Length: 155
Image (cartoon, rainbow, N blue to C red; front, side, top):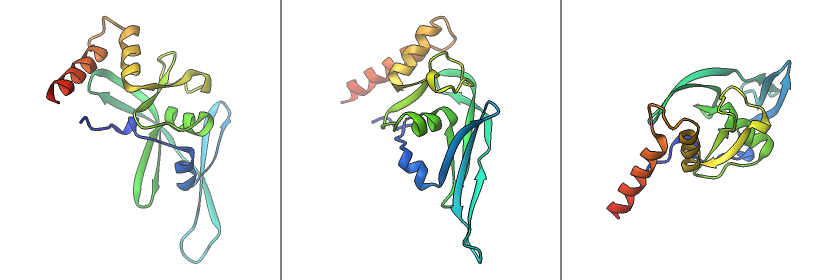
């Protein structure tokens, strides 16, 4: 069985709320994400801070290098990073089940407008990538079909 990638794992709004995400809104045409938690130590007063959104260069096994907006924060002594598109989709549109990914309809990873985000399976996403650029250096959809055939032959 193929290993599930982090971008295909389930994510729910309740998971974000449990990690302290308290508010998401737009200010001056930029997304703002706030996280609130109870301070440890003498003060029990809650602390609210804005999370930093940074741009990360990612390499995909069967796609060219791309830049994506990433939200990162620490929770329970672990660093959690999520693509901004996944984060916004969960917060405003609904939960993401296992095996699904968030796709930018216009193929622009910086356009995180809610109308530009859609939920697709990994296979549908790779098929869309191939349909949008069939002469590209990497045939993502063809690679995925080859992986599916290999798995069915091994059964």
